Amino acid sequence: MQFSVLILVFCFFTIHESVQQKAPERKPGFMVFGDTSRTGLPFSKDPHVVRFNGRYLMYYSIQPYKDKSNPVQGWGIGIAESRDLINWKKIGEITPAADYENKGLCAPCARVIDGKVHLFYQTYDTGRNDAICHAVSTDGISFTRDRTNPVFHPEGPWTCGRAIDAEVIKFKGNYYLYYATRDPGYKIQMQGVAMSPGTSDFSRSSWKNLSVDAPMLKPELTWEKDCIEGASVIERKGKLYMFYAGAYNNAPQQVGVAVSNDGVSWKRLSDEPFLANGKLGEWNSSESGHPHIFSDDNGRTWLFFQGNNDNGKTWYLSNIEVFWNDSGPYLQN
Image 1 (cartoon, rainbow, N blue to C red):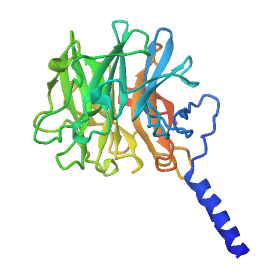
Image 2 (cartoon, one colour):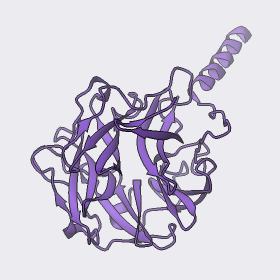
Image 3 (spheres, one colour):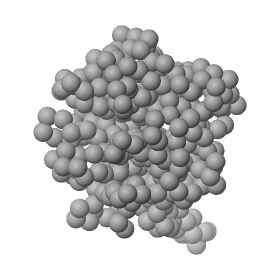
């Protein structure tokens, strides 16, 4: 009997050690960030970074509190600050404050426009009713919701009506809103795009869906499996480059790149992932996903992404510098 008990205890600790990710090694110059404030475990997803008022601000998704009696319910958006893009400190949260957000909000996209931070984000956990919302802040921490929220959801025979993973960029005088949605069968995740004038207030009536009859981009490559989502777009020499997530979380999700001359029609730069998941045993072996491409004031660009090696029990955020040549973006290592 004692021998059997020892075996059970050994198995318990062996299994426990195998499923809980150890924190990535914090090497000099290597960014790793995990928000432990809600459950005690590092859990941060969907990063988006801006430089605002002399510092970097990173917005990211955080899971619900483990304590169900907590007055703050559902997913939220965390805010962290940094001076060097490597070391980050959490300074705030954006939590549900309206009926349409009462189950949560997440997947932020932040843009500094006319001295204010405009946040585009999604409602969460309402299935086909998830939609894109908009809010504005003068300090990057406290936000005022758009009175017309939610400001966008798609229509058309190819989509279920859901809109998530907002990405907004101004290009050739207009604002483009990139979003992910699913097919009517709720299986395939695809990309669409909407447009608003350059003088837009981003309210609901300002957006025109350009992907009415078909998706802008859908999974076609083997590694993309059933999903393209999490688009992040940057302009370089008159072209747009889209860094996107292929495959659902931990499938593994990896990062691809496509290019466009008009913001609507896209061509992949490669049949292989631009940023792959890590090797077995590495901190991101389960995925390197949900990218955000950030252009700093000094011209350097950084690819932020999420990763883990325990199939989503924990989530860390990191970044890697992206370099450019005539063919487009590349990684040195």
